[in-house]
Amino acid sequence: MSISCASFAAKFPHVFGDRKWKNSSFTPIHLRGSFLSLNFHNRSCNITFPNIVSVDSNRTLSCLTMEGQYQTTVACPEADKYEKELDVAVRAIQMACSLCQKVQESLISKTSSQIQSKDDNSPVTIADWSVQATVSWLLSECFGSRNVSIVAEEDIQNLTKPGRAGLLEAVLKTVNECLADAPRFGLIGPQTVLGRKEILEAICRCNSKGGKTGRFWVLDPVDGTLGFVRGDQYAVALALIEDGEVVLGVLGCPNYPMKKEWLSYHHRYYRIISKLTPPTSESWDKGCVIYARRGSGKAWMQPLLNGNKKLEWPNSARPVQVSSIDNPSLATFCEPVEKANSSHSFTSGLAHSVGLRKQPLRVYSMVKYAAIARGDAEIFMKFARAGYKEKIWDHAAGVVIIQEAGGMVTDAGGRPLDFSKGIFLEGLDRGIIACSGAKLHDRIIMAVDASWNSSSL
Image (cartoon, rainbow, N blue to C red; front, side, top):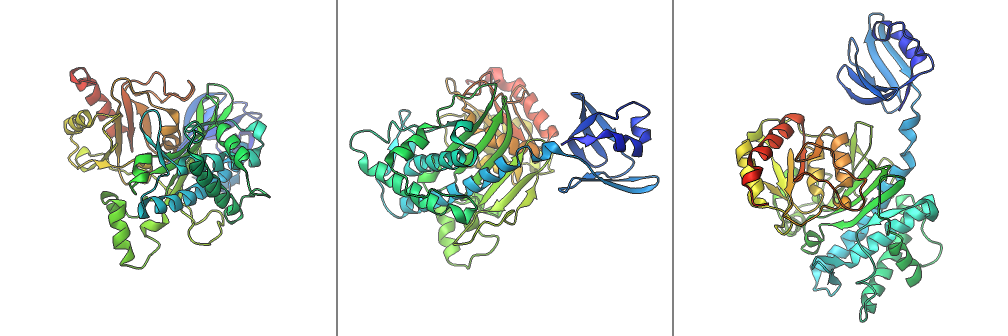
Protein backbone atom coordinates (compact mmCIF):
# COMPACT_ATOMS: atom_id res chain seq x y z
CA MET A 1 0.00 0.00 0.00
CA SER A 2 1.62 3.28 -1.06
CA ILE A 3 0.71 6.83 -0.08
CA SER A 4 1.31 9.69 -2.49
CA CYS A 5 3.60 12.13 -0.73
CA ALA A 6 2.81 15.34 -2.60
CA SER A 7 -0.52 16.00 -0.88
CA PHE A 8 0.46 14.09 2.24
CA ALA A 9 3.55 16.20 2.95
CA ALA A 10 1.63 19.39 2.27
CA LYS A 11 -0.82 18.56 5.03
CA PHE A 12 1.90 17.63 7.52
CA PRO A 13 4.81 20.06 7.00
CA HIS A 14 5.85 19.67 10.65
CA VAL A 15 6.53 16.01 9.96
CA PHE A 16 7.96 16.02 6.46
CA GLY A 17 9.68 19.42 6.37
CA ASP A 18 10.70 21.03 3.12
CA ARG A 19 12.15 17.94 1.43
CA LYS A 20 11.32 17.45 -2.23
CA TRP A 21 9.25 14.26 -2.04
CA LYS A 22 6.74 15.18 -4.71
CA ASN A 23 7.32 12.10 -6.83
CA SER A 24 7.96 9.72 -3.95
CA SER A 25 5.75 7.17 -2.29
CA PHE A 26 5.57 5.61 1.14
CA THR A 27 4.59 2.07 2.01
CA PRO A 28 2.79 1.78 5.38
CA ILE A 29 4.18 -1.18 7.27
CA HIS A 30 2.42 -0.97 10.61
CA LEU A 31 -0.11 1.26 12.29
CA ARG A 32 -0.58 1.49 16.02
CA GLY A 33 -2.03 4.37 17.98
CA SER A 34 -0.38 7.55 16.70
CA PHE A 35 2.63 5.82 15.17
CA LEU A 36 2.77 4.99 11.48
CA SER A 37 5.73 2.93 10.29
CA LEU A 38 6.64 3.62 6.67
CA ASN A 39 9.06 2.41 4.06
CA PHE A 40 10.59 5.24 2.04
CA HIS A 41 13.00 4.31 -0.76
CA ASN A 42 13.44 0.92 0.95
CA ARG A 43 14.31 2.59 4.26
CA SER A 44 12.07 2.35 7.31
CA CYS A 45 10.98 5.34 9.34
CA ASN A 46 8.46 5.95 12.11
CA ILE A 47 6.20 8.99 11.93
CA THR A 48 4.42 10.34 15.02
CA PHE A 49 1.20 12.23 14.36
CA PRO A 50 -0.34 14.64 16.87
CA ASN A 51 -3.32 12.36 17.39
CA ILE A 52 -4.78 9.02 16.39
CA VAL A 53 -4.21 8.00 12.78
CA SER A 54 -6.25 5.38 10.97
CA VAL A 55 -6.24 3.82 7.55
CA ASP A 56 -9.53 2.02 7.01
CA SER A 57 -10.55 -0.67 4.54
CA ASN A 58 -11.60 2.04 2.06
CA ARG A 59 -8.05 3.42 2.09
CA THR A 60 -9.06 6.60 3.91
CA LEU A 61 -6.33 8.01 6.12
CA SER A 62 -7.55 10.09 9.06
CA CYS A 63 -5.76 12.11 11.72
CA LEU A 64 -6.24 15.13 13.92
CA THR A 65 -4.14 18.20 13.15
CA MET A 66 -4.11 21.66 14.66
CA GLU A 67 -6.52 22.69 11.90
CA GLY A 68 -8.95 19.89 12.76
CA GLN A 69 -9.53 16.40 11.46
CA TYR A 70 -8.05 15.64 8.07
CA GLN A 71 -9.12 12.77 5.85
CA THR A 72 -7.85 11.78 2.45
CA THR A 73 -8.21 8.76 0.22
CA VAL A 74 -4.77 7.50 -0.62
CA ALA A 75 -3.54 5.41 -3.52
CA CYS A 76 -2.91 1.87 -2.35
CA PRO A 77 -1.88 -0.31 -5.29
CA GLU A 78 -0.26 -2.88 -3.00
CA ALA A 79 -3.53 -3.39 -1.10
CA ASP A 80 -5.03 -5.14 -4.10
CA LYS A 81 -1.95 -7.10 -5.11
CA TYR A 82 -3.05 -10.40 -3.58
CA GLU A 83 -6.76 -9.68 -3.29
CA LYS A 84 -7.86 -12.27 -5.83
CA GLU A 85 -5.42 -14.88 -4.53
CA LEU A 86 -6.70 -14.44 -0.98
CA ASP A 87 -10.32 -14.55 -2.06
CA VAL A 88 -9.84 -17.79 -4.01
CA ALA A 89 -7.71 -19.31 -1.25
CA VAL A 90 -10.33 -18.68 1.45
CA ARG A 91 -13.11 -20.11 -0.70
CA ALA A 92 -11.00 -23.16 -1.59
CA ILE A 93 -10.21 -23.82 2.07
CA GLN A 94 -13.89 -23.46 2.95
CA MET A 95 -14.61 -26.19 0.38
CA ALA A 96 -11.76 -28.33 1.67
CA CYS A 97 -13.05 -28.08 5.24
CA SER A 98 -16.51 -29.15 4.12
CA LEU A 99 -14.94 -32.16 2.39
CA CYS A 100 -12.95 -33.06 5.51
CA GLN A 101 -15.95 -32.83 7.79
CA LYS A 102 -17.83 -35.37 5.69
CA VAL A 103 -14.86 -37.74 5.58
CA GLN A 104 -14.23 -37.42 9.32
CA GLU A 105 -17.86 -38.23 10.03
CA SER A 106 -17.46 -41.50 8.14
CA LEU A 107 -14.23 -42.33 9.97
CA ILE A 108 -15.79 -41.72 13.38
CA SER A 109 -19.08 -43.50 12.72
CA LYS A 110 -17.58 -46.74 11.46
CA THR A 111 -14.35 -48.65 11.13
CA SER A 112 -12.79 -47.58 7.88
CA SER A 113 -10.19 -49.18 5.65
CA GLN A 114 -9.58 -45.82 4.03
CA ILE A 115 -6.66 -44.98 6.31
CA GLN A 116 -3.20 -45.89 5.06
CA SER A 117 0.32 -45.41 6.36
CA LYS A 118 3.11 -43.53 4.64
CA ASP A 119 6.74 -44.58 4.68
CA ASP A 120 7.25 -42.79 8.01
CA ASN A 121 4.23 -44.66 9.46
CA SER A 122 2.18 -41.45 9.71
CA PRO A 123 -1.46 -41.91 8.68
CA VAL A 124 -2.93 -40.65 5.43
CA THR A 125 -6.61 -40.76 4.51
CA ILE A 126 -8.80 -40.18 1.51
CA ALA A 127 -9.23 -36.62 2.86
CA ASP A 128 -5.51 -35.88 2.37
CA TRP A 129 -5.54 -36.90 -1.30
CA SER A 130 -8.99 -35.48 -1.96
CA VAL A 131 -8.20 -32.05 -0.51
CA GLN A 132 -4.93 -31.90 -2.42
CA ALA A 133 -6.64 -32.79 -5.68
CA THR A 134 -9.49 -30.34 -5.05
CA VAL A 135 -7.35 -27.34 -4.10
CA SER A 136 -4.87 -28.05 -6.90
CA TRP A 137 -7.67 -28.20 -9.46
CA LEU A 138 -9.32 -25.01 -8.18
CA LEU A 139 -6.09 -22.99 -8.16
CA SER A 140 -5.21 -24.18 -11.65
CA GLU A 141 -8.65 -23.29 -12.98
CA CYS A 142 -8.66 -19.85 -11.36
CA PHE A 143 -5.10 -18.79 -12.26
CA GLY A 144 -4.14 -21.14 -15.11
CA SER A 145 -2.17 -24.34 -14.64
CA ARG A 146 0.94 -22.77 -16.17
CA ASN A 147 0.85 -20.02 -13.56
CA VAL A 148 0.34 -22.28 -10.55
CA SER A 149 3.16 -24.02 -8.72
CA ILE A 150 2.30 -25.94 -5.56
CA VAL A 151 4.34 -27.51 -2.77
CA ALA A 152 2.22 -30.11 -0.99
CA GLU A 153 2.66 -33.04 1.34
CA GLU A 154 1.07 -35.96 -0.50
CA ASP A 155 1.98 -37.91 -3.63
CA ILE A 156 0.16 -40.72 -5.40
CA GLN A 157 2.54 -43.52 -4.46
CA ASN A 158 0.35 -45.04 -1.73
CA LEU A 159 -2.82 -44.26 -3.63
CA THR A 160 -1.86 -46.21 -6.76
CA LYS A 161 -0.33 -49.32 -5.20
CA PRO A 162 -1.77 -52.67 -6.31
CA GLY A 163 -4.89 -53.65 -4.44
CA ARG A 164 -5.98 -50.10 -3.65
CA ALA A 165 -8.46 -49.54 -6.44
CA GLY A 166 -11.22 -49.08 -3.89
CA LEU A 167 -9.26 -46.35 -2.15
CA LEU A 168 -8.72 -44.51 -5.41
CA GLU A 169 -12.40 -44.81 -6.29
CA ALA A 170 -13.28 -43.29 -2.91
CA VAL A 171 -10.98 -40.34 -3.64
CA LEU A 172 -12.52 -39.84 -7.10
CA LYS A 173 -16.02 -39.84 -5.60
CA THR A 174 -15.07 -37.46 -2.79
CA VAL A 175 -13.36 -34.96 -5.09
CA ASN A 176 -16.18 -34.89 -7.63
CA GLU A 177 -18.81 -34.44 -4.93
CA CYS A 178 -16.85 -31.54 -3.48
CA LEU A 179 -16.22 -29.82 -6.83
CA ALA A 180 -19.88 -30.19 -7.79
CA ASP A 181 -20.62 -27.94 -4.81
CA ALA A 182 -18.18 -25.23 -5.96
CA PRO A 183 -20.88 -22.69 -7.02
CA ARG A 184 -22.13 -22.59 -3.43
CA PHE A 185 -18.71 -21.27 -2.45
CA GLY A 186 -18.55 -18.76 -5.28
CA LEU A 187 -16.21 -20.82 -7.47
CA ILE A 188 -16.68 -22.60 -10.80
CA GLY A 189 -16.56 -26.37 -10.83
CA PRO A 190 -15.81 -28.72 -13.73
CA GLN A 191 -18.36 -29.05 -16.52
CA THR A 192 -18.09 -32.82 -16.44
CA VAL A 193 -17.13 -35.36 -13.80
CA LEU A 194 -13.36 -35.65 -13.42
CA GLY A 195 -11.87 -39.03 -14.21
CA ARG A 196 -8.99 -40.97 -12.72
CA LYS A 197 -6.43 -39.31 -14.99
CA GLU A 198 -7.50 -35.73 -14.19
CA ILE A 199 -7.54 -36.27 -10.44
CA LEU A 200 -4.19 -38.04 -10.33
CA GLU A 201 -2.74 -35.23 -12.46
CA ALA A 202 -4.11 -32.66 -10.00
CA ILE A 203 -2.40 -34.45 -7.11
CA CYS A 204 0.85 -34.88 -9.04
CA ARG A 205 0.81 -31.21 -10.05
CA CYS A 206 1.77 -30.39 -6.46
CA ASN A 207 5.41 -31.27 -7.10
CA SER A 208 7.14 -27.92 -6.69
CA LYS A 209 10.27 -27.88 -4.53
CA GLY A 210 9.89 -24.23 -3.54
CA GLY A 211 12.92 -21.97 -3.46
CA LYS A 212 13.96 -18.35 -3.10
CA THR A 213 12.59 -16.98 -6.36
CA GLY A 214 9.20 -16.96 -8.00
CA ARG A 215 5.74 -17.67 -6.68
CA PHE A 216 4.40 -20.93 -5.31
CA TRP A 217 1.57 -22.14 -3.11
CA VAL A 218 2.17 -24.31 -0.04
CA LEU A 219 -0.57 -26.75 0.92
CA ASP A 220 -0.99 -29.11 3.83
CA PRO A 221 -4.24 -30.89 2.92
CA VAL A 222 -4.83 -32.27 6.41
CA ASP A 223 -2.40 -30.98 9.01
CA GLY A 224 -2.66 -33.21 12.04
CA THR A 225 -3.91 -36.35 10.32
CA LEU A 226 -3.63 -38.29 13.57
CA GLY A 227 -6.00 -35.84 15.22
CA PHE A 228 -8.25 -36.09 12.19
CA VAL A 229 -8.59 -39.88 12.33
CA ARG A 230 -9.16 -39.71 16.09
CA GLY A 231 -12.02 -37.26 15.62
CA ASP A 232 -10.05 -34.42 17.17
CA GLN A 233 -8.38 -31.19 16.04
CA TYR A 234 -6.80 -30.75 12.60
CA ALA A 235 -6.31 -27.97 10.07
CA VAL A 236 -6.27 -27.39 6.34
CA ALA A 237 -3.48 -24.94 5.53
CA LEU A 238 -2.74 -22.96 2.39
CA ALA A 239 -0.14 -20.22 1.94
CA LEU A 240 1.30 -18.26 -0.96
CA ILE A 241 5.04 -17.61 -1.04
CA GLU A 242 6.67 -15.10 -3.35
CA ASP A 243 10.43 -14.72 -3.61
CA GLY A 244 10.90 -16.63 -0.38
CA GLU A 245 8.40 -14.62 1.69
CA VAL A 246 4.97 -15.78 2.83
CA VAL A 247 2.52 -13.20 1.45
CA LEU A 248 -0.78 -14.75 2.54
CA GLY A 249 -2.00 -17.60 4.67
CA VAL A 250 -5.31 -19.37 5.24
CA LEU A 251 -6.04 -21.85 8.03
CA GLY A 252 -9.22 -23.90 8.02
CA CYS A 253 -9.99 -25.33 11.48
CA PRO A 254 -13.18 -27.42 11.17
CA ASN A 255 -13.21 -28.55 14.81
CA TYR A 256 -12.00 -25.35 16.40
CA PRO A 257 -14.60 -24.41 19.02
CA MET A 258 -15.84 -20.86 18.99
CA LYS A 259 -15.45 -20.83 22.76
CA LYS A 260 -11.91 -21.19 24.10
CA GLU A 261 -13.07 -23.31 27.05
CA TRP A 262 -14.02 -26.20 24.78
CA LEU A 263 -10.43 -26.63 23.59
CA SER A 264 -9.73 -28.64 26.72
CA TYR A 265 -12.27 -31.29 25.71
CA HIS A 266 -11.91 -34.01 23.16
CA HIS A 267 -14.03 -33.42 20.06
CA ARG A 268 -16.03 -36.62 20.54
CA TYR A 269 -17.03 -35.55 24.05
CA TYR A 270 -18.22 -32.20 22.76
CA ARG A 271 -20.17 -33.86 19.97
CA ILE A 272 -22.19 -35.74 22.59
CA ILE A 273 -22.82 -32.61 24.65
CA SER A 274 -23.69 -30.49 21.63
CA LYS A 275 -26.44 -32.93 20.62
CA LEU A 276 -28.18 -32.26 23.92
CA THR A 277 -28.42 -28.51 23.29
CA PRO A 278 -29.57 -26.53 20.25
CA PRO A 279 -26.79 -25.10 18.07
CA THR A 280 -26.00 -21.39 18.37
CA SER A 281 -23.75 -18.91 16.60
CA GLU A 282 -21.14 -19.73 19.23
CA SER A 283 -21.24 -23.50 18.72
CA TRP A 284 -18.34 -25.75 17.90
CA ASP A 285 -20.03 -27.06 14.79
CA LYS A 286 -19.37 -23.94 12.79
CA GLY A 287 -15.58 -24.23 12.88
CA CYS A 288 -13.65 -21.33 11.38
CA VAL A 289 -11.30 -20.13 8.68
CA ILE A 290 -8.59 -17.65 9.74
CA TYR A 291 -6.59 -15.75 7.15
CA ALA A 292 -4.22 -12.84 6.66
CA ARG A 293 -2.26 -11.02 3.99
CA ARG A 294 1.30 -9.79 4.50
CA GLY A 295 1.50 -6.09 5.37
CA SER A 296 -2.20 -5.65 6.08
CA GLY A 297 -1.76 -5.49 9.85
CA LYS A 298 -4.92 -7.55 10.29
CA ALA A 299 -6.00 -11.16 10.50
CA TRP A 300 -9.58 -12.22 9.93
CA MET A 301 -11.82 -15.09 10.98
CA GLN A 302 -15.03 -16.26 9.37
CA PRO A 303 -17.23 -19.23 10.30
CA LEU A 304 -17.29 -22.34 8.19
CA LEU A 305 -20.14 -22.53 5.73
CA ASN A 306 -22.71 -25.01 6.97
CA GLY A 307 -25.78 -26.66 5.54
CA ASN A 308 -26.87 -25.45 2.12
CA LYS A 309 -25.94 -21.81 2.65
CA LYS A 310 -24.08 -19.89 -0.04
CA LEU A 311 -20.85 -18.10 0.78
CA GLU A 312 -21.53 -14.38 0.60
CA TRP A 313 -18.28 -12.50 1.07
CA PRO A 314 -17.07 -11.59 3.63
CA ASN A 315 -19.16 -14.31 5.29
CA SER A 316 -19.50 -12.61 8.71
CA ALA A 317 -15.73 -12.21 8.96
CA ARG A 318 -14.37 -10.33 11.94
CA PRO A 319 -10.83 -9.26 12.78
CA VAL A 320 -8.85 -11.25 15.31
CA GLN A 321 -5.81 -10.22 17.27
CA VAL A 322 -3.35 -11.71 19.70
CA SER A 323 -3.79 -11.56 23.46
CA SER A 324 -2.45 -8.59 25.42
CA ILE A 325 -1.31 -10.82 28.30
CA ASP A 326 2.42 -10.45 28.93
CA ASN A 327 2.58 -11.88 32.46
CA PRO A 328 3.99 -15.43 32.21
CA SER A 329 1.92 -16.65 35.17
CA LEU A 330 -1.26 -15.75 33.28
CA ALA A 331 -0.15 -16.96 29.86
CA THR A 332 -1.22 -20.19 28.17
CA PHE A 333 1.26 -22.09 26.05
CA CYS A 334 0.61 -24.63 23.32
CA GLU A 335 2.65 -27.65 22.42
CA PRO A 336 2.18 -30.64 20.09
CA VAL A 337 0.12 -33.59 21.31
CA GLU A 338 2.45 -36.20 19.92
CA LYS A 339 5.89 -36.74 21.43
CA ALA A 340 7.40 -38.41 18.37
CA ASN A 341 8.89 -35.27 16.83
CA SER A 342 9.08 -32.89 19.78
CA SER A 343 10.28 -32.84 23.38
CA HIS A 344 7.58 -32.29 25.99
CA SER A 345 10.10 -32.59 28.82
CA PHE A 346 12.23 -29.70 27.51
CA THR A 347 9.26 -27.40 26.90
CA SER A 348 7.89 -28.30 30.34
CA GLY A 349 11.15 -27.34 32.03
CA LEU A 350 11.39 -24.22 29.92
CA ALA A 351 7.85 -23.20 30.80
CA HIS A 352 8.61 -23.59 34.50
CA SER A 353 11.79 -21.51 34.29
CA VAL A 354 9.98 -18.71 32.47
CA GLY A 355 7.20 -18.67 35.05
CA LEU A 356 4.39 -20.29 33.06
CA ARG A 357 2.04 -21.87 35.56
CA LYS A 358 -0.96 -22.92 33.49
CA GLN A 359 -1.31 -26.40 32.06
CA PRO A 360 -0.21 -26.52 28.42
CA LEU A 361 -2.83 -26.50 25.70
CA ARG A 362 -2.02 -29.61 23.70
CA VAL A 363 -3.72 -29.61 20.33
CA TYR A 364 -2.93 -31.21 17.01
CA SER A 365 -1.76 -29.31 13.95
CA MET A 366 -1.59 -25.62 13.12
CA VAL A 367 -4.66 -25.05 15.28
CA LYS A 368 -1.98 -23.89 17.75
CA TYR A 369 -1.19 -20.96 15.45
CA ALA A 370 -4.90 -20.16 15.19
CA ALA A 371 -5.23 -20.22 18.99
CA ILE A 372 -2.50 -17.60 19.38
CA ALA A 373 -3.75 -15.42 16.53
CA ARG A 374 -7.24 -15.42 18.05
CA GLY A 375 -6.00 -14.62 21.55
CA ASP A 376 -6.87 -18.00 23.07
CA ALA A 377 -3.24 -18.71 23.95
CA GLU A 378 -0.06 -16.68 24.15
CA ILE A 379 2.84 -19.03 23.40
CA PHE A 380 3.66 -21.93 21.11
CA MET A 381 6.98 -23.71 21.51
CA LYS A 382 8.28 -26.61 19.49
CA PHE A 383 11.73 -28.12 19.84
CA ALA A 384 12.26 -30.99 17.47
CA ARG A 385 14.11 -34.12 18.40
CA ALA A 386 17.46 -34.74 16.77
CA GLY A 387 17.18 -35.71 13.12
CA TYR A 388 13.72 -34.24 12.54
CA LYS A 389 13.43 -31.43 9.97
CA GLU A 390 10.50 -29.04 9.97
CA LYS A 391 8.59 -28.73 6.70
CA ILE A 392 7.37 -25.43 5.32
CA TRP A 393 3.76 -26.62 4.90
CA ASP A 394 3.51 -27.18 8.67
CA HIS A 395 4.16 -23.50 9.42
CA ALA A 396 3.84 -21.11 6.46
CA ALA A 397 0.14 -20.19 6.79
CA GLY A 398 0.23 -19.98 10.58
CA VAL A 399 3.28 -17.74 10.69
CA VAL A 400 1.87 -14.93 8.56
CA ILE A 401 -1.48 -15.10 10.35
CA ILE A 402 0.09 -14.66 13.80
CA GLN A 403 2.33 -11.86 12.56
CA GLU A 404 -0.52 -9.91 11.00
CA ALA A 405 -2.61 -10.47 14.15
CA GLY A 406 0.14 -8.67 16.10
CA GLY A 407 2.31 -11.57 17.29
CA MET A 408 5.84 -12.83 16.68
CA VAL A 409 7.22 -16.06 15.23
CA THR A 410 10.94 -16.83 15.09
CA ASP A 411 13.35 -19.67 15.65
CA ALA A 412 14.94 -20.04 19.09
CA GLY A 413 17.70 -17.67 18.06
CA GLY A 414 15.20 -14.89 17.38
CA ARG A 415 15.54 -15.09 13.61
CA PRO A 416 12.61 -15.16 11.17
CA LEU A 417 11.76 -18.56 9.73
CA ASP A 418 13.26 -18.99 6.27
CA PHE A 419 10.82 -20.29 3.66
CA SER A 420 13.19 -19.82 0.73
CA LYS A 421 15.28 -23.00 1.06
CA GLY A 422 12.96 -25.62 -0.40
CA ILE A 423 10.49 -27.85 1.39
CA PHE A 424 12.36 -27.77 4.71
CA LEU A 425 12.96 -24.92 7.14
CA GLU A 426 16.71 -25.07 6.69
CA GLY A 427 18.99 -23.27 9.12
CA LEU A 428 16.45 -23.42 11.93
CA ASP A 429 18.08 -22.53 15.24
CA ARG A 430 16.99 -25.23 17.70
CA GLY A 431 13.23 -24.73 17.58
CA ILE A 432 10.24 -22.51 16.84
CA ILE A 433 8.77 -19.92 19.20
CA ALA A 434 5.51 -18.09 18.51
CA CYS A 435 4.27 -15.49 20.96
CA SER A 436 1.54 -12.92 21.30
CA GLY A 437 4.06 -10.20 22.11
CA ALA A 438 7.71 -9.19 22.37
CA LYS A 439 7.94 -9.34 26.16
CA LEU A 440 7.02 -13.02 26.42
CA HIS A 441 9.06 -13.81 23.32
CA ASP A 442 12.22 -12.26 24.76
CA ARG A 443 11.85 -14.12 28.05
CA ILE A 444 11.55 -17.45 26.28
CA ILE A 445 14.55 -16.76 24.04
CA MET A 446 16.67 -15.99 27.12
CA ALA A 447 15.43 -19.11 28.90
CA VAL A 448 16.30 -21.29 25.90
CA ASP A 449 19.81 -19.88 25.80
CA ALA A 450 20.23 -20.53 29.51
CA SER A 451 19.04 -24.13 29.48
CA TRP A 452 19.85 -25.51 26.03
CA ASN A 453 23.31 -26.90 26.76
CA SER A 454 21.93 -29.04 29.57
CA SER A 455 19.18 -30.53 27.37
CA SER A 456 19.43 -33.83 25.54
CA LEU A 457 17.98 -32.55 22.25
